[in-house]
Length: 445
Image 1 (cartoon, helix red, strand yellow):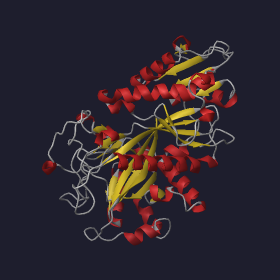
Image 2 (tube, rainbow, N blue to C red):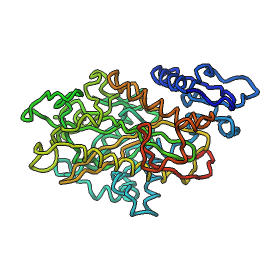
Image 3 (tube, helix red, strand yellow):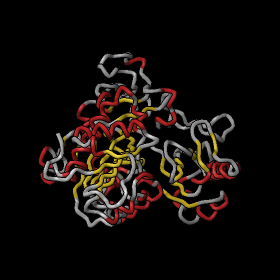
Image 4 (tube, rainbow, N blue to C red):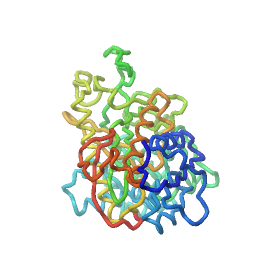
């Protein structure tokens, strides 16, 4: 399947120097479109070709070309997308959106969040009477608190810099720890690290104390029962959802969602013997912090169909996760994605770009109901951590990106992807269209 003969052959820049798996998937997708011979490793010298596609890592894209030649250049990253991928900007963006639209489903789909700009621990004294006033009223002395909160650097990724706290003093001690090691390149703890250049913008989120708990070892991917119900232990996990945004702006959710599990069974947050450090391992589900486990903690969400639910009320273990529950979680995710990208549209994105994101959700399990909670949005997600067993879902994903993002630009939309006739909620190529709005792109986000 190649481009239409009446359309000029594009030139395609492909460059992923630090991500060989991504480069391989991009090349396979282009080959499926008949564009293998159009690939070049570097941008051509002027003049520009009739059509230029830059399907490359952010730093290899010439963003000035994206901005100045919107009719002939298509790029695989929006030039500015900090409203989505920086945690503190995302928090502000969503809060601003909900002030005007309190009825939005997004109100239930985000944890309560505070964003702060802080350089020294002593600055907290003033914050408790200002931007952290309501949080301070909820914090009590360690040991008496029933609520925990999670601190995240606003510009960190792969689980770096995460801390848990339950009192004003414990938060103060965390920032003192950062200051004490500020001369080093990074601060190390038992499960995370923080680059000192990131120690300024932070978000604080309520810790979600009712996660859906399953045992990923109960059922194998081939549906073989591996553990009897009497031996099951509940593990925390989050859902990694691959999301494709195109133009200004159509948003697709990839139906093959990953479930990424913690390394140890879940238990409520507890302090170590020195009464200062919180043991994080049962709470961290990021695969970047568990590379030693290989694929042990990675499942498809659909593969968990039939697993016993090990969270919730006293009947935990009496019910299983079924197809209806999985479908409801996916429906909630699609709705949250639609509203999140709507919230970011106050700064319209470039009309001649597309991008793949990894969006993380936690499923909270309240009595009788599940509720997804948006955690963060990642650009250039670490797809290599999916593992060899599930590489096939990445092959399928990148081929779908080629069909819905590259092919219409090349001129072959009539061969399988009439985006205009694709309704919101409809699933094609295992992509569910979540949002389709037309805004005047200006390179924002």
